[in-house]
Length: 547
Image (cartoon, rainbow, N blue to C red):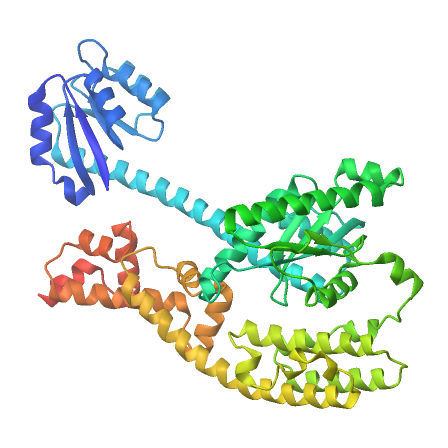
C-alpha cells in the first residue's frame, strides 16, 4: 500500500482533502498532514512516504524548495504541487523539478483524484518493473546454479564438448576457470554430524562444506565447487598467477603441492570448527582442463571409496605418481566413450543401455584385463546405477536387497561372467522399478503442485516459486505438469485465480480492489483485464449482472 503526506500552512485545506477523498479506493493506506515544509521533511525522515502533495506558497521553505529537497534525498517519491497562483513561472519551475503534477486551487475533487490515481499507477508500474528486474536477476542466478551443475556432470562423465563451447559456458556461468590451463581435482570426504537426518538437512551440510571449501581454496587458487554425479563433493583448483610462475620455474611439485596441502589442512580445520565434521580430500594429479577431467575423475573416484576416513584422516591424499610411471596400466578409454551408461540411464534408453553393457563386457573379454581393470568396470557400472536411482529418489538397496553384496565383499569382484550377469540383472530391475516410480512420482507431484497453488493464490505464486518449493527446475516442472494434465502450470494458476475471483464476486461484498489484493495482483486494471479475457466481461460488469 501507498502512504501520502498533504502539506499546506492552511490546515483546513489538508483536513478537507483528508476527509473527502476516498483514499482507500485509490490504494492509499495512510494520509499524513503537515503545516510546513520542515514538518513534511521530518515525516519523510520517520515514515515510508510515497507521495507528497504540497502548496507552493508557505512561510519559510516554500513548496518548490521542498520538492527540490525531496528530489535530492528521496528521488523515488512522487511530488505534486498545489497552489492558487496560475503564474507560468511556477508551472515551469515545477516541470524542471520533475513534479508529478501541478494543480490549481480551488481543488476539484475529480481532478485531484485523477492526479493521485496517475501518481499511484506510476509508482506501481515502477515497482513492478523493479520487481521484474529483481526476479530476473534471481532467476538468472538460480538458473546458473543448475547450469553449472549440468556442465560439471557433463565434464566429469566424459561428455565431449568443444573447448570454445566450454570457454563460453565458463564465462556465461561466472566460473573462474580457464580452458587449456593446468588444473587439479579434489573429492571431499566429510562426516555428517547429523547422521540420519532428512534429505534437506543433508543438503544443507553439503552446501556448508562446499562454501567452506570455496572460501578456503579460493584464497590460494581459482576454484569451482559442486556436487559430483556419484554423491560426492568435488573441487576444481586451477593455478593463479603466483602458482603459474612457480610452475614456469619448474617448482610445481615443491611449491604448488605444498600450497595444496596447507590449504587442505586449513579446510579440514574449519570444517571441524564450524561443522564438527571430519573432512579430508583426495587429489588428482595435474591435468589440462577440461580435456583431462574425465580421466582424473575416474582415477580419483576409484580411490575415493577406499580412502581412510574419520578424525585422524590426513587433510589431503595424492596419487602415487612414481608408482604409476613404474607400472603403467592400459587405459580403457573405450569404456567411457559417449554415450556413457549414466547418460543412457538418465534418458531412459533401456535397450541402448543393455547394448552398452554387452558391448562393454565383450570388449573387456577380448583384452588381457587385470583385476584392477575389472574393478574399474565394476565402479563404472555401479556408479551409473546409483546415480540413476538417486536422481529419482531411490536407493539401489531398496530396488534389490542383495545389490550391495558386491560392494561389501570386494573379493567377489573377480569374475567377468559374474559381474556381467549382475550388471544385466540390475539393469532389468532398474528399468522395472524406475519406470513405475516415474509414473507414481508424476501423479504425486501434480497433486503437490495443485495443493501449493490452492494455499498460496494470494501470494507471489508463479511457476518459479512453486518449482523452488518442490526442488525442481521451473522448465522441467512445467513439462511434467503439462504432460500429466494437458494444461500448462501457468494457465492452471491463472484459472484458479479467475475461478476464485468468480466465487468472491458472486458470494461476497468485497470491493474489487480487495479481491485484487487477495488474489496476489497488485494492479486492479491488470486483474480486470485478465478477468475480462477469461469471462468476457469486467469484474464490475459481472457483479452487476449477478445482482
